[in-house]
Image 1: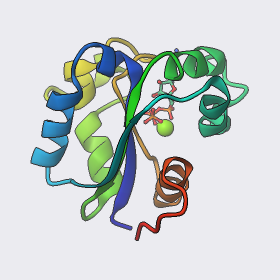
Image 2: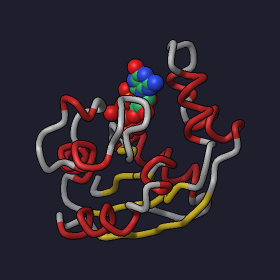
Image 3: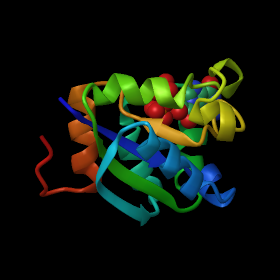
Length: 137
Ligand code: GTP
Ligand code: MG
């Protein structure tokens, strides 16, 4: 698939980094297919991150992801999922390569500026979570 899904997380929105992050994403060759400024309720954040339920950081993650506005977007590029994860860098910004979005804008493994889908299947599930009723191929 050529689609991935991203969120600019509450820490990066609060820090005023929406514009810089979107610029880096489009400069890297991703086209924005859908985008919105929104906020997750606790229940929506729980559902979005259900796969992490039971992990020790789940409560903290849900609390953080619903703590303020986010930008949710569907991105298109050849090899989108893998290339986007390369662009954002390691989950922990301390381990993220120089120049990656997380290296530049993330504060910690928990507050790490952006989300990127981890598979084609999850990209479609996540895109439909935020933009239901639309077709992304
Ligand atoms: P996403 O693109 O956000 O899914 O990140 P990822 O795929 O690089 O990491 P993963 O799916 O394993 O974890 C999802 C999110 O949970 C991470 O982005 C972090 O926000 C959070 N997280 C992961 N590990 C930890 C941790 O050890 N502590 C805390 N507080 N949060 C964590
Ligand atoms: Mg993940």
